Length: 309
Length: 266
Image (cartoon, rainbow over all chains, first blue to last red; front, side, top):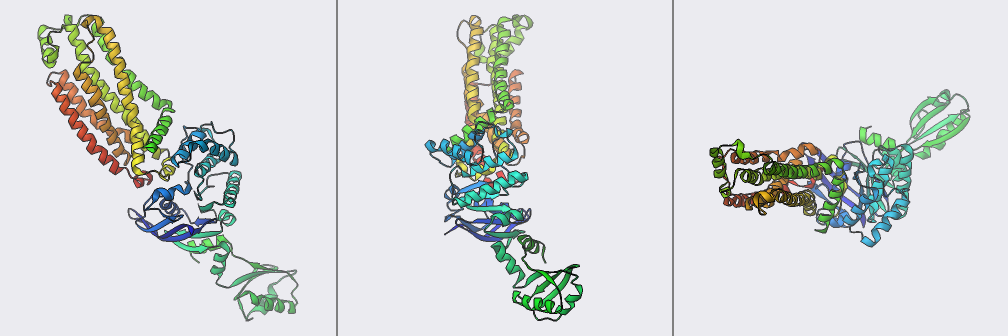
């Protein structure tokens, strides 16, 4: 069973069609990234999954529970971190967490212990009695993560968990997300931070203008994008320019371009063609220093899908 | 019901941890008690108002308050404060207090951006609505009864010699303060809930009940100037109408209270 399944979600806000048939699934135990620019439909999608918004059409399930038919059961299985911490700033850290623990039916006898345990896990020991309004952004985000975990849900939905945080706090939060995933939580994370997605996600869904453009592992998406073609960077000990002429017309070579005095990029139909390229260059007397396969990163995939080729 | 109560308790803790919020509620009712008691005290213990009024004027006042026939000028004026001025203060201050609390509870969650995780919790719309209604209305109700109790005690102590008996509150005052005032405040709360669906700030939302001050002022002025004689039957009829309006408006407010309206920016 998939932890989350979204099928053909459509959502309109006045004249704007925010979602145009969004479909994807999240496997149990994985970290899935929902990538897209601002206004792509990421937040609308997670708000439908958490039962905050109703889709105009389409369906979604969370651990097998339909979010429209059994919304309370579906919500019980999700720990949700919205884009902003959304904490009651006039209340203390403990008041916020105990309130949500009770809302999620955490037994009274377990609740305080669980809150203490989670505060320790997130480095917030000794902060329980502090008013949330007095905490830094990074600490508020940690409190909000604890709030999402207080009922021990199998799924975490995190909407841009590191936006607005300084690099050190963002790194801590990413570490925490990895740790939670290792402990068995399924994580759906919305982000437009591609480095973060590459670091954290097992799979990503790239979404733009309310449509899912691609779903898969970051590496797999890159391979699909290249369509079997591959690029190599060739570096020589001396100038490479005159040797490159020897490659024109060679079978399997699609494009050759200089990338510096001693460096060139060669685009091939398939990677097997690199041996004949190397052979031809060596026979021409080129002193090769390095031949390196270039793998397109998630950023390139994202840019090409979102902005076009 | 448990979750509604949980939400109400959280809202009380949140609202009353704001000194401004607590002060506005306490001051509203403290002012009501103070003005009611001070006016009565001045009339009961100060110079005899009969010295400044002609017999015709006193007769005119007695015609507005038929149950005050036989009272002397001092008693008559104290009675007028107790049956017209004091109930008017209770009604206006309750309306103000409930507007502030309701706007803070409904529009405040959106303004402070705290509503989203609440909507993602396993609670039904009805539980959430009921929780917010309890959070807004119960403190007003408790404040009305507590401050009215204090007013009764103080007025009776101050006017014991003047009347020679415990006279306050007369039946009409009881009906207005204990029945009409909560019903009117509840109507104000419903209007603020309806307004909260449209307003983006607490301040904007709290203004929606201000329209209810107009009929209140009209009745008050009508009584003061003698053009309106309010009898017990009128008050019972008004209570019945208000309860019916409360029923209609709370349904409208419940209908306007939907997750999408609470979360989508306008």
